[in-house]
Length: 168
Image (cartoon, rainbow, N blue to C red):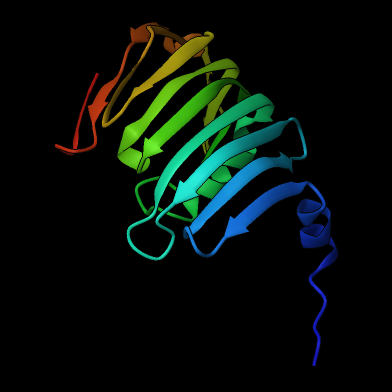
């Protein structure tokens, strides 16, 4: 019995152009455009060794992507983000992955950033800043945080996912 995909998945599938080569165990992703409520993510490249430790060589472009949508998706994959925390802003940038997720490289710029905690009247407004990914490590450019009546502060973050370290 055939069960057609839901309408939102059908729309997404219209935006995929790919070649699957089962002999080479690879996918050539010519274009994958993911339309979001605001902006889009476009991905292209290759994934080899599909059945034996997949290796990716992918490029992604983010254009006017709503940070709120990405932040809410991230909450589904970790318990480290407080469910009452919300984020707003716009993401633009380019990323490349050669190998696995620990080989991610590129820069994403965040503009109009804002963090809010449910139950608190005050929100943190963030200056524009870059997030730079260099494989297992990364860092942000300095971020000016305006806490309204709570004052101002500046912070920059660095991380190393291989060592499970983060520093401000």
